[in-house]
Image (tube, rainbow, N blue to C red; front, side, top):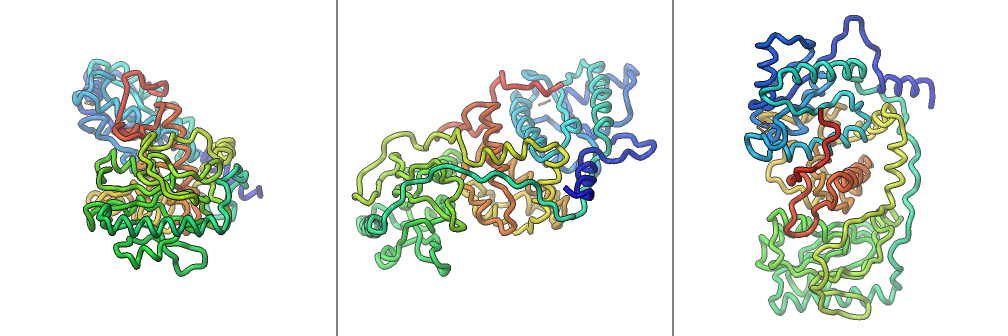
Length: 471
Ligand code: FES
């Protein structure tokens, strides 16, 4: 690194402390316990640092990472979130769900290089005035030690370390003759599904205008079925179009890769599509090659159609499926984990700089949102103006908030299709953030809750969830 880069890293890790500086800490507190506890600390004349500005909420369950980001964006050096002890929440389980959400949010902040001395969580009951005073003292000392919140560094050309290449074996190659046989099976099957009335539309791929690139199509006629294609250029996750197709037809057939089934079970679990209205057509997949090379998500995949699909298409023919789990088991090993480990091995200041550089390239085109099968809100929080939680300006603040909000919205829900990273025109490594959060969800809460009928991890809780970071 050059001197300039080194100084930027140093700046990111610990900004210079101006004379007389005192930390600004925003405390987001629950109305019923912590606020009353803080009130008791005041009425009993306990002394604690005047560094904290309180914002009162009905419950920690109401608090969102957006509010913490807003506090930092407005200049806070640290944030404290505090509410009722587990079992005491006035809305029964708001604090238990919040505990999970903040566990993952904290992991994300750490991965992005934010000094965790700036972020605190505490249980303080209405009777714990003394605890409130102690928590404020401890949090003030930690934030003081962390120093003023570093400002985004000036651009100096440093883009971060070279990450190790993702490695692994991909699916078996499919010969040209087998690929043609597979395509013929697909076209014939699609036409039969339409003709028999088993589906009113078939969601598949057809040839696009770019060489080798296939694009999504909703085939509703025999002629359109004759244009269906399949192969390494079938990049799009067609699950994204399932809900739209079901607005056009009572039943839709969906051409689906094994890795895309997670996304479908996510939509079914969240009530966005009904499984009985979909006919799943699983094909032998040769792996996809977005930039000529095999996508990282394909490394380690056999490419076989998942047996849970209703119809299974291989070069040998068409067979009935419908057996096995509705979704493949979550990946326990991923080719990108070495890249995540490389980022984690950086000092916090360099991690922060790395991600600041990545987010600085964001154009706010929202292509990542448009292509995500699990991003289906009718009005995205990024488009809301009253209140405007996500700044719309393309700068370090706005881009950072947007990218963190996007990641948190998908934490415990993202199914690893990597579509967001593929379509990002700025090549931001959204896939690494998503994968890191998936690993954190699994580490803290076990299975990610990707099976039908299960709740997503961050809207669920267990009384014994870990909380070692909570004061
Ligand atoms: Fe206090 Fe829910 S009411 S945390």
